[in-house]
Image 1 (cartoon, rainbow, N blue to C red):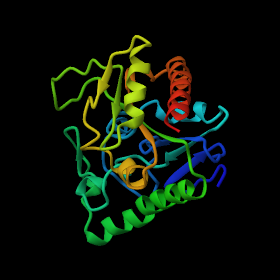
Image 2 (image 1 turned 90 degrees about the vertical axis):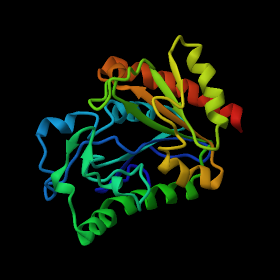
Image 3 (image 1 turned 45 degrees about the vertical axis):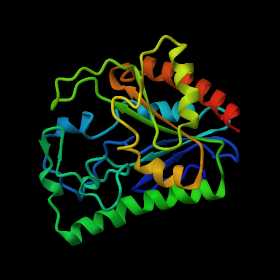
Length: 244
């Protein structure tokens, strides 16, 4: 499955048995030409459409020995892979105060979107993890410093998310704090609420995983992306060794 790509996902690097897979559900802002979201074009460069910075970080990490990156290949506004299939938010009709008119689909349209993107993405990820078991999965996301729909400050440099399985999180939090970072434990939101991909592919099978949310203003430049990629490679390696 090395270097595989289709409409729903892309794989960077070669997954290795006992390696580390960086999974980014929201790595792309791509909207296929035959899908009209009917939104202002500039919204596709904002957090509602893509996790800013994570595609580049995953690609950098995948250049390191033992790492590969599995990334979503369409905007989360086309299909949000990190939502449960039965929830309406899997194809959002609004995000952070912005309406998405093109997602007001009938049942057939909704089903077609899931069949085209959501199910191939998760089937490919499941197959990869079954055929090439990993020592650790890093679920990599980014969050906006300011939500348009809230005045609540978001001071954390990085958040660590988890649901029931907090093994990797408990190891990673002090490692991140030791680097002088403001670390959110289940912040800016809880992995018990938003953890669909890891619930399905990690927690359900007892696979160790680390949920990471980096603040977007820290990784919107090449320098920031390089810095965080090196940091996450170092910490992920430490966690993978300790957890086995």
